[in-house]
Image (cartoon, rainbow, N blue to C red):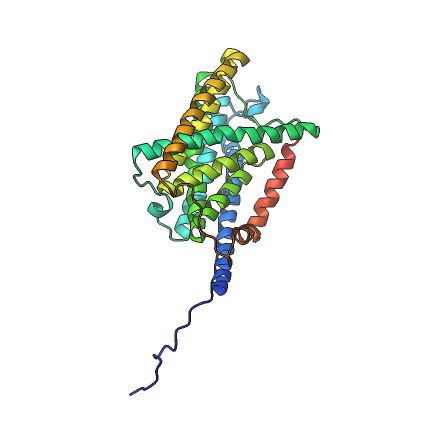
Length: 338
């Protein structure tokens, strides 16, 4: 008989929090590296899909149309069909491969739990209002660019007044992005980072969402929008609020652009001011509702003194994939300065 006071596996020792934090940091760096490389693949696929379409059309005998050079040899309808397909393939395919490679179930990575109609509605109106307010710092960055002698203009997609083209344009900016960008950033990115704290996951996914847009003005806007969209996903455990916020924000932008195109600047100002006023009023009411109904909605995680937010952000970007994303974003941002 073994009279040892210990089991055959030896005595059990608690892991010191510092050691545990270092292990988590190494694990986060590996996870972030995989996430960032997946994002880079998605960005290159989106760009490369147009070139694949060009080669395919050339192979089947299509004669390129350079009547309007802005459409890169496509007819306007083909241009938007190719762009929309590129969006879908570029972001959705890498996301699904990421889930499969890491054995992540779609039900856990893409949650759609029932959170109640009122809470979902409040999250959507609050989030859309935050997106409206995010235009203020974004416009400030635009003015700073102009002050330094740059144009401050954002990249725009070419457009004609043909109804089929306008419909495809609407799909490309207001329908497809809310689906595939939420799949990627509030699915792949947010889900992968939540293990290391919800607060960090919200901030980290918002930073990557901002960097993905590739220019300084949209980077600021997308970061703020990314914060609120990630927050509502975490608090409701559902992608529906972020998808709807994204759709309303992009849809409002489309409506203002169309009112300017067909009604002039005065009409655009009227539509913009009316929509912003209504959205901000609903946003304030929704903020109060969420504050009263869910005391923890705006509360942050407890702080781990051994693994603070700064250390987590360091691990998020100081890996090969993270550095590559930062470098590509800087190159893209400076390229758009003109």
